Length: 301
Image 1 (cartoon, one colour):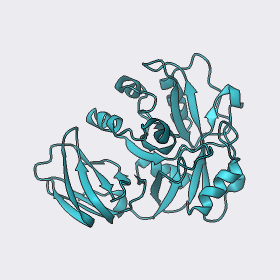
Image 2 (cartoon, rainbow, N blue to C red; image 1 turned 30 degrees about the horizontal axis):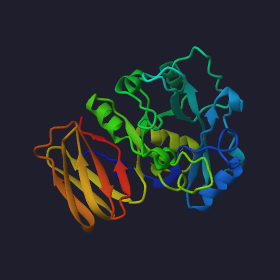
Image 3 (cartoon, rainbow, N blue to C red; image 1 turned 90 degrees about the vertical axis):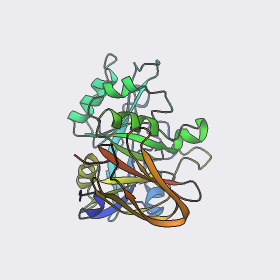
Image 4 (cartoon, helix red, strand yellow; image 1 turned 45 degrees about the vertical axis):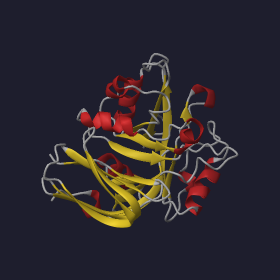
């Protein structure tokens, strides 16, 4: 049996990895953003303001808003020009130092991602569907950690909330990525960009250091509603999933390899992996409200 995040020691902590404040183009102050997520039962939040000259190159200081039972990750959404279709790069980096250097005009997206990785950050390709990120764009970023599989902020305006296509393409290329769901909240008048997508990170404690270590290891799952309670894998034999009540549970592999079960309020299922061809499997759970939960890929070798 392969060790999964569900068999590791520790506790699942709920958090949002991507949001904005008045330090860039968000409508709420950092203090108000942190208070919202704390009051909503989150264990941590990352305010990732746009790291641009127009906002004064902010690495937003959320340290004053940490308290017992609630913490923050320090980071930013990094930008530069030069993607395939002429769009600018959006790279979320968590765990950045406050003295992270400004982005030179000539710095490319891959160079910017590399600099964030070298600074010790957890690095995410943000909302690739929304800004038409190509396969070549993503491959050029090198060994970043994750792709944003769900982004509530862009989804309600442009119907591009999900970026499953990019995850599947990169996994098929052998990239060992994890996938996160986020709000990307800017706190405009409507409330459709907050408390919509989150991660549950498994670690032995709630310190920022422990959370970042777990994120880099892929020790988390993502959700817009359902909960995953257990996922067990015996390669070549079976996959077991236990979750909150769902209408569909999927086992997904390389492009066009999948199997699923559809029932009313199903809470556990066992799939045969005897004829499974992929080097990995990932789990998708969908409930009756069309909310989803995604496991990270579980690699067999």
